[in-house]
Length: 275
Image (cartoon, rainbow, N blue to C red; front, side, top):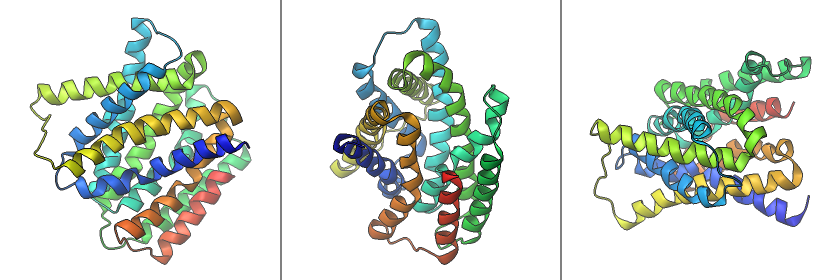
């Protein structure tokens, strides 16, 4: 692997792993629905100039609908998981989405899971149960449920987006699905009077821009740039390290506890994803 590819993956890992930790302090100040809508609108706006080709209206509508499953459902669930639980817990649960991809893949015409994948999926759910049994101060059942819901809906988004990725390229499909779903989300919140921009200080706005431009913009760009050089399968392995890095960052910056059961659960989950 080249130095540039390694650098791209390191940037991706840092941004993706920091999302829950950075957004946690804002949960008492900003509505999680507004935060998610703003994040994807700004992130998509950053990605749009980088797209590889223009798409017809029909394709844009399809990508907007698919993107809404990620933006409006999955990422909102993730933000609610952060709100009602520990940031490291939410980060670990969303990282289990490949397990659900394996389960749902046959229903989307993808190949049936091999015996090896079946074992990995079973091991992954064992890891999730161990992880959940290690509830610490700050964790709640509500937070766990939102985290699992986020992983399930993100897995469905991944499978639905796959044909469009193959057809248009990953960066183009992601940019369109992120930006236009962010527009729809923002418009929906405005329609129901829920697009609430509270009075924020400079540091809070900088965090919002970090989540939009950094986590949803730059990180997606660096991930796809690395995928072009080393392949999507190899690049995707960066997600295996997210629970470890996120837990470490939460321990350092949020003083979140790291219990024995949680550590064992994380190890088991990572092993299951690697099988």
